[in-house]
Every structure is written in structure tokens, then in C-alpha cells.
Image (cartoon, rainbow, N blue to C red; front, side, top):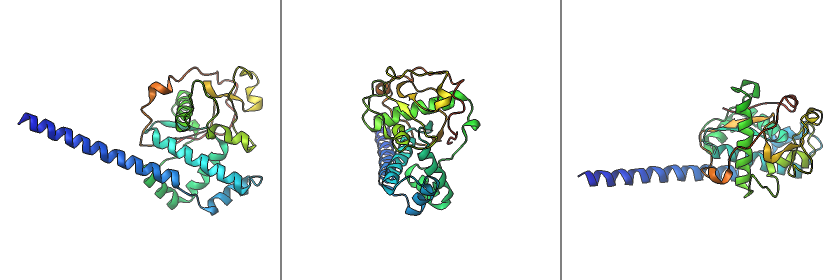
Length: 237
């Protein structure tokens, strides 16, 4: 009798696991194949009229990558590494019905947008950008501790010359971080030692990758005393 109950419990757990995995896989496919409306993209171009249609395709791809790593984060804070992606996110939220449906199908919940100032403390924001780095690297098969390149979300602002955008340095030994002058340039953050970036963040209900051993630890962080004015701030919950 006990054996039968145990077997039934194992089978039930297996079914629950399979259904949850199938749901997550379905959400991921939706996010990967989602197409932002031309009207939405035009709203972004009006604010940044130097961006071409080809540039907007890159912004769209990077924005989907952000939502995908929020999907991977299982309710944990994921900071926004890109100003231009944040602009698209802002505009998307204004399309209330479309955004609500997008969140429901792709994330299983509504992804709120909250200013960094409303977060619990600076540690929460810093952990969010470190998590964004780890997950973005995982998406593109990059070793986060010894990267050979930057993930899309971490180089798109620099590539598109976004005014006020965030820039990240891959070779931190070549261009050392200067905490005294960082506020004047508002950029050049060391990608492998992220600890001082203002920006936006999302918190989804559906989970961070379990490959924590591969990601490694959070690493150290630079002092934020001189770069608190770099970039706008927002977050998700």
C-alpha cells in the first residue's frame, strides 16, 4: 500500500514538473518570436530620430532579450543594462492592452516598472545588474567571468551611439575603472565587475537559471559614490 502511494506521488510530481516545463517552454517560444508593432517602434524613433529602421530591429531584438532574461529570473530583480531598450519598454507599457497580454503570455504575470529610487536599497539594484550580466551571458554562451565578447544588452547603446546610453568595457585591464572620473563620462563600466550602474529592472515570476555553478559568484563591485548620477533609474516588481 505504501509502495503504491509512493509510486503515485512520484508519478504525480513528474506530471506537475512536465506541465510546468511545457508552460515555460511555451512562454519562451512566445517571447523569442514576438514582433513589436511598427507603431510602437515609430514612437521610439520619434524620440531618437537618428535611429534607422535597421537600428530599430536591433533594439527590438535586445528588448526581447531583456524580457527573456526576466523570464529566466524566477521572480528575482533583473536590472536594465540599456537606455534605448528602456525607452522601448516605457513606450510598450503605454500600449496597455498589448503589454498586459504580452506579459501574460510570455511571463505569466504583469512585469511592473519601478524607479530605482523605489527599490529597497542600492544592494538590490547592484544585484539586479549582476544578475542581468550572468543571464545575458548564459543566453549567448559567454563565460561571465572570462568573456570573449559582450552580450547584446550590454553593447547596444554604444553600438547605436545612444545619447546618455550605458557603455561597458570588456577589457577592464586595458582601460581601468576610474571612480574619480566615472561621473563625467557616465559610461565605461567594467562588464566583468559590475557593481555601479543605474538603470531599469524587471522582476518576473518565473525564475533564474539553475546553472549557478557555471555563473560563479557575484564578484566585487566598485564604489558608487561618484556615479550615482549616471543614467536614469527604474525597476520592475
